[in-house]
Image 1 (cartoon, rainbow, N blue to C red):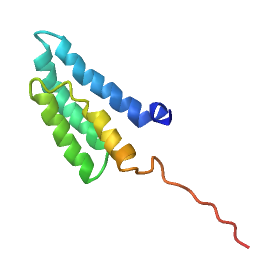
Image 2: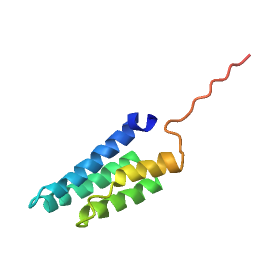
Image 3: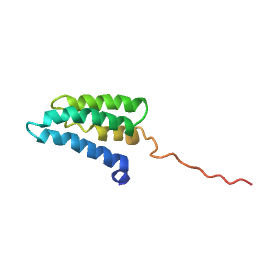
Image 4: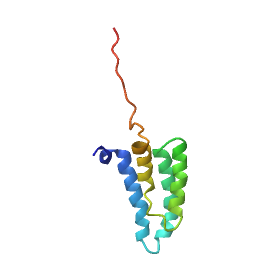
Length: 100
């Protein structure tokens, strides 16, 4: 499928896995969330500019900072919302026109 070769999707999946990995570390995991939450919010706003990127960065920050919510794949859900459900183009389309 085309979705699995998209760089934005792959990066989002990697960020989701990194955020979920902190749950596996027994004692240090919650403290790593204090570092990971602002970083994830910054990356979300960089990946998705504009108003919905800002909203998504707030949501990912809250999701990472609150205990027990690390299993929510926020980056993947944002990708699906942006490119699958809303069907925004992945790249601007270039239309070539010949002049006479």
